[in-house]
Image (cartoon, rainbow, N blue to C red; front, side, top):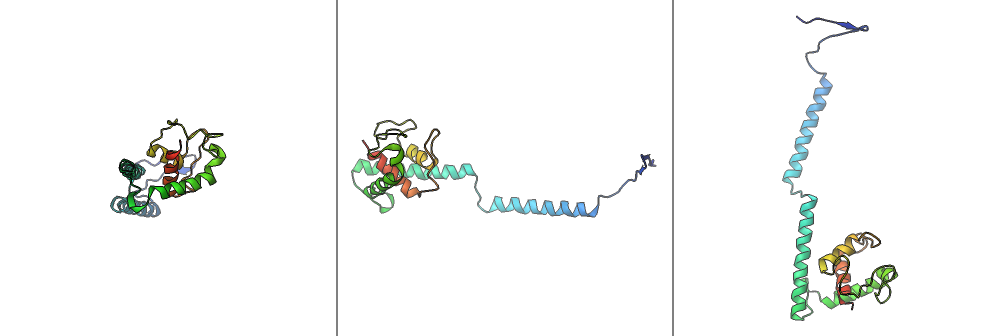
Length: 163
């Protein structure tokens, strides 16, 4: 037997069920959550780390192809493009985007000297791609939203020719 109490004029009454609208909203929320999880689990969705890993793999393959091209001395590049074409594109981009900081002859100014044999963040293709695409603390802006990956490749090829 349950006792009924009255507190400050409020009568206690024991409910057997929650209000119908709450049960309906909970049911809809559970159905939506199951559908949402099912969509992302079975639609081929990948996490940011998987996307970064795939991007790194592609970049490493390009680097291996570049090293093979350098070793043979042939001007062919992966996909049939000539390395010289990348260098030409990179030279034009450097003239329009990089001269302000790195100077006309890439000897430095606001930005560092690009004719040195070593860079602060590395001089490998992967390091240069990351530097150009994502930028670096202390002044180097990110250019990933302004230029295409092929243009980044061109800049990397051009910077690697600087001495």
